[in-house]
Length: 212
Image (cartoon, rainbow, N blue to C red; front, side, top):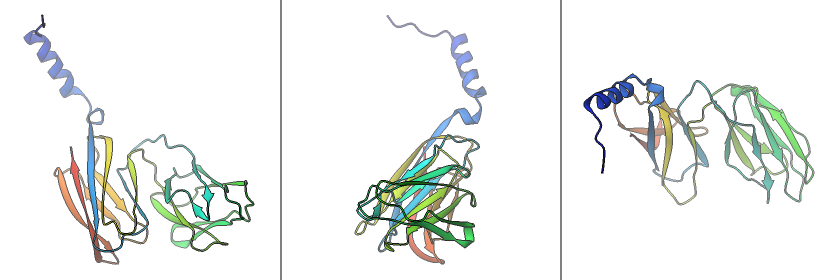
């Protein structure tokens, strides 16, 4: 036999729900990214947060490739580069605009090198190998747990992503692709948005966001 809540109990529950801070009520973001032509390598969607629990990052090298197209690392934390390949590598970055410059030197097979991310926050820095110019990955110095890295593929124009448990009071979502214009979406004034993805002000695709 089911017990019914008394009117007093129902009213108390309603008061408790209303009194919850906005940060205690989570929402989800569902996105669709569509490119008109060939997509880039990787992108990231994220919602800024006051606190984060992002751990130190790690990127390996195998078959003359980085094993990740992008990693997220909190500014001031460390990223470890491994060499699981059977050849030497030389990992480096030189991004004057973001004040990011490092060179770990030669890395024989089996070696590890660690660097500290001490450049601009909310930036994306390209990392390469001086020995193998076609190798590339990206470090996103972003301090938020509410992010989604989207790896793109040749021959595929449309991608979907979801970011869960975003605090209700969040105000903006950023969508960033290296060398593309930044997309900033105000997520307070509606529940659905479509924005152009541009590179040097030329439309390259669209991103649609739904908040639930």
